[in-house]
Length: 276
Image 1: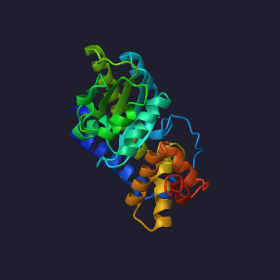
Image 2: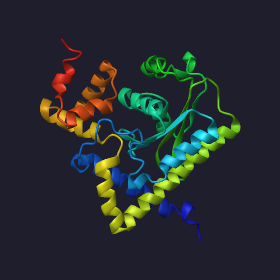
Image 3: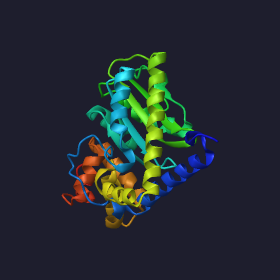
Image 4: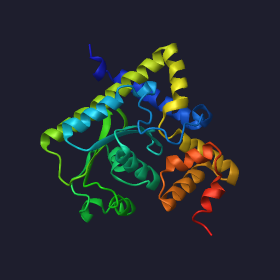
């Protein structure tokens, strides 16, 4: 008999459950619509029932790889929407937020190719020429190296583990192995949590409650919906407008979204800061 971790039917069920859960959330933003304070901590969705244990794995990855910070972001199966689950510090949050806003960078490539992206020297133009805007922005940050590993176990792939180091320099062989083990353990942990949610009525109820509070970019998707209504455009177009505003103003997209969701400002008022 196959062990659970190598049972193809179990892998398929977990993947199908993950796609169903993330699809439901994206299709029904009202389920994640209760606003959180704009000063919410960098832990993102780490205390969501699906992501229990992820915060500890991020801290372990930092310790074992000798980097300065880490984050884990999860993607929809299509890779066109993502949420920050946990970041160990503000720089890791900013690095992930930058890539979400720009739509380019090592974490997006790592998820798309399902291969690690190792950049030991960010100052090396040849290492970052695929992401010209990201390269220009990240040079203003105190980061020397970035390492991204897909969060994947067997056929269950949900996101990426993002690591950064202030000094330039590649990971050693042992540090790379440690990063890959932590990323795999993160996938196994999320898969276990997904299975628990799917199999327990109590866990489903807790999942719905937690979703209101803890997913990392809830406000972004809710704000995009509000902008779409205000401007009469699609939610996809509204999200691009929101990303553009965040980039032009040099502000985290989560903060701008929080202002819109809490109705402190409209998108038109935000636009007026950079448009005459």
